[in-house]
Length: 442
Image (cartoon, rainbow, N blue to C red):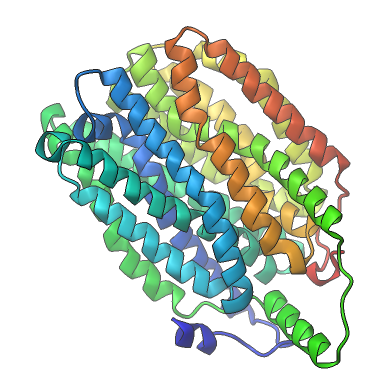
């Protein structure tokens, strides 16, 4: 992989061609699609996984155990972001995007092959946990590297549009995972789904890794990163130092990014992946129609994300993000109250909330990249971003299920509203510097 990375790394000061930018954009996007499919398919098939790999004596406990493993996978994301963030500074963004993709696929293959709880008992749950830890570690690195890499290779005036492909891939991966849930639930009998049908999408994700590796072999290294490395080397040779930010400034921006990400992550995981599970387990909705409703809402989100990226490149990042946070806070109670056993209620609630979330998908990579200098971009994004996703996104399904099953779903709603308002307060304090040359971010 080091040889492949070296072949696609250009000398500092040499700009990418338009063809090289597009090729690298496509390779990153397709890889992101696979990574998010491997990640989201676990949530989509959580009810089947709980029945197959946990004890069936208490179905609610089994589901909570499955969601706890989902949350534990998120615990590894900050570590993955930190480790791969350091590696991305040394070996390049491309190297990280290759390695993390292979690790994610390996985790999916392990899950597909785990024997059932009836066959090996508690070892089935342990193997599932180990596979999700590997995936969480890889996902932290992939998400960080992608959110940094795409804004760095983008033309200044199209930074949000390029960066929006991260959210398109996120939605696309979730869409394909949901599509599997919809088709398999309709075509395979319930007993067969519980025995082997749920394993199909995990095999699918593992096999697609070969295609992604082929696409990513010719990705170009970020010229912003290459020039930064050359500048650091030149400074060391000339015995000069760049004072940069103080530790206090670094910590302050990391905390701000953390709370910004909390408000963007928590609602997205609830409405993109968990809403269908909530409708099935809490409202008695049939699995097939529930997955179909999520499918439709996800398509809407995917279509709106690049549109919002295009708009953001013209009006800036702050207005869309603040609108998203305030709208999400205002609509949380009404949208959860709308969901019943009728599929149209889930579709309506998800469509509204996923439509609003396009404001984040179209702006997030560009916004953070413009707020953090290249010298600290991987450091801050590799720690604050996956940590926020782990603490707020990874625990969201578990907390929602726990509060709702106890009749206190309104407490979770208040929690989500408070997180969104905190995120809006952070963005309000940031300056609008859309389209700035990332070399000039100070």
